[in-house]
Length: 72
Image 1 (spheres, one colour):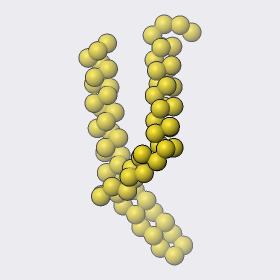
Image 2 (tube, one colour):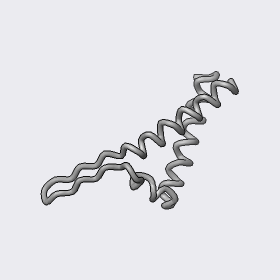
Image 3 (cartoon, one colour):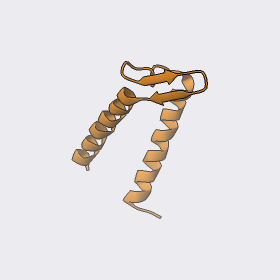
């Protein structure tokens, strides 16, 4: 496998490793606890819906993909 697809996979792998290292270091401890994230805890039940966090991820990925399209 060679060419642009291989380069894209290598870049995505490096990006995932970097995000994993940042998450492991604790710098993303705030993520998932934003205002708008729904948490319901009962005695035998727990429900979590990270609405605001997923909107933030969606906007960030949209910006990144838009920049990549303009560059290539």
